[in-house]
Image: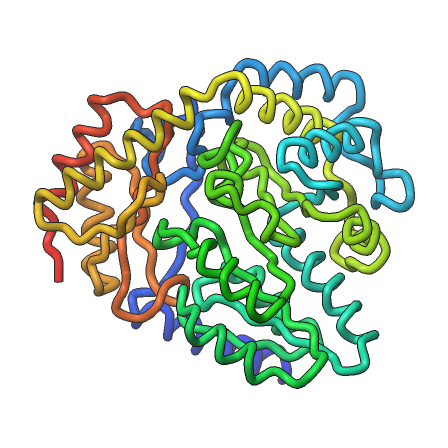
Length: 396
């Protein structure tokens, strides 16, 4: 009876997704290189990947991975506090900390896990504090951060996207002595716009709080040697804790917490997502060190992807398509309805271009879109083909 009831509930849930044009399916993609895939026997130009700098297939990164896998094998063999913390992981954490100009870093197996570990560590501190505390999150923060705050056992509020007036009012209304933790992204994953870091610095000077900055989509693309958006703005000192993912511009997988040595020690001792999970393998750690080296030695990759982003934005604006300002390689083309977004993605595939339709619940209702992402490895001809294919789409 219980199994039958479960199946009925699942059928209802899945039917609802289908009816609302929110049904998801997985497509097994053959990865050909940093900007091309094979899908159902067709070669497509990939404008859907987060590999902004083409490092997934960079020779230096691949060679570092080959050497590590021969030396250390595929897996780490255990959680970090048992046998899973390798010399390679230690070296990667030191390299990440230097790159991000932080006292220390802790490497984890995924960005989602990193977000969980950061919030869990902060929640453990808040629970020891008599007046307590709470998390204040930008509405467009990644789901991993929203989920972590919701499951932390600590109060949290969500403020409207980049609405610093509302944030300041929430801070002003906080009980005396309560610890306030503000969480935001530097470059937002679906809209490609930036946090107002200068504004946050001004608010923080008036009403102190702990700032957690998710640099998942800022690292690699912005700042000297890709150190991130805060480094680009010269506001690293405003950030107390930074989250880095290795799965975007670094072309790998995994994530890292960057902060003070004290906070990183607390993650090792209080971050349940870190303590109770198998460590990332040595192959990933060695590749991360190599990828950071490429960022330092090949700044032209960063310059090119941002130049391409400006070019695509200008071209689409000239065609009357609304664009958010900036030069992030994430370019949303809002089509509003789920059906229109799916139709547009299919039309682009017919022209040899892979662009994914993003629909609720990933984005808000009536904001379904194409999420275009650019790589420094895209050719000029491929970018022109993208502009020509997107320009005639139906909007509004």
